[in-house]
Image (tube, rainbow, N blue to C red; front, side):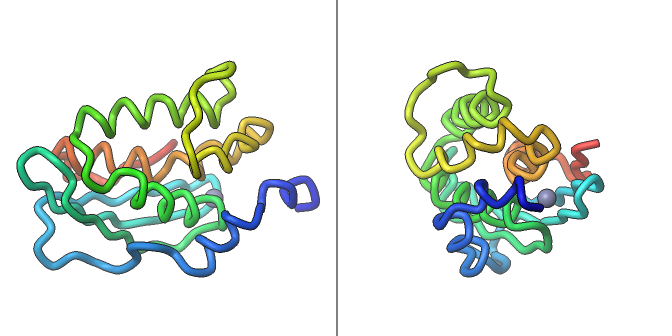
Length: 147
Ligand code: ZN
């Protein structure tokens, strides 16, 4: 766990302890479950789409600090965005956490996950919420697994 300590920056810990947009959404139009068996992270995501944009979203889950903070920060980052915007942002985020996007653009608060690229096993923790969001807004009902 010592190696991971550097990953647990202040922002990640803050979002892990006090997740933003936690809970469920009674009038959700889209929902999906995500599962990362490698780490034991699970989450349920509820999304309300309006006029092609994410009007609101909430998540419930249990998982490690990285997966919880990533879900929390993601909900803040995608609110108000269109499906195409979310998919484009996910691609950039994925490139960032896998280290495949050399340089790349500044993703604001999501930059805290750039250190994850040094810990491949944690990439799935960081991307679980995003995979789940993608499944939700594409209307897939099944549980998403990172495996
Ligand atoms: Zn995890």
